[in-house]
Image 1 (cartoon, helix red, strand yellow):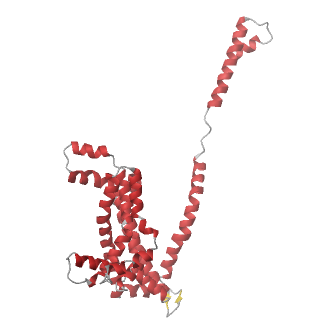
Image 2 (cartoon, rainbow, N blue to C red):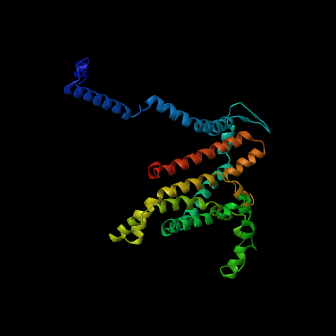
Image 3 (cartoon, rainbow, N blue to C red):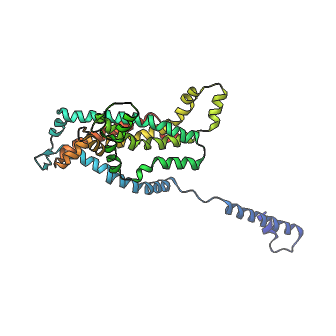
Length: 327
């Protein structure tokens, strides 16, 4: 077509030349429209990597400055030589030997693990039924939100106030003992409710159970009622539906709640000190005591051990469920 148009140039216009010129115009117009409609060039792989690096840089710098560097410094200081009220940067294993060679510190480690296991079990036992009701039986989103807000009402007050409020509740003349005696459960006040390991477990369970309710209720609210109806139509009973449908689908919420509770309970020291009368020593209490005595190196040892325990617990829980896939 372009060649025909060139041949018609300089000649008298004829029908054939007019047709050739029209075809050339249509061809040029089509090429122009094709170029205009072509998509913009996609950034290269190198540009995409550069953008990803820029987006990740602030978070990486923050984590490095406030997580990696402090942990590395804590590990390093744990090998310093501890004097009476000072430490020297002379590397030694004396602090580590003191921890693992003293029954008091090993007992604190075991107490920490034992209380963590008990509180984890009690928060799950109390929190799962509440989350089951909120997430599965209440389908109105507004009502669900109201019930979850009610669960976090205690957090509107200070943490220390919530802990100390258990002292008059669990004392020999407290509300719990009065209620037990009026119901005829006991004939005299129970002295073992306060300043014991039981009081510590009760206080921690009440404080941290909400962290188990929230994630489980969220996962249960995502279960389609049609799945439960289909299982019921196939003849499955309530127990089997719970074991094969509800529990597996809510397991990611259980794992997230268990991680929240585990990290906070393992690092606890205030609840144990306030409700046990300093009779129950956890690793957190050991750290506070050593820091108060200016024994920074030994406090670093306990901190490293506590961090390792937390890491093992969290890694073990994450192996149970692939949260990136489930959430």
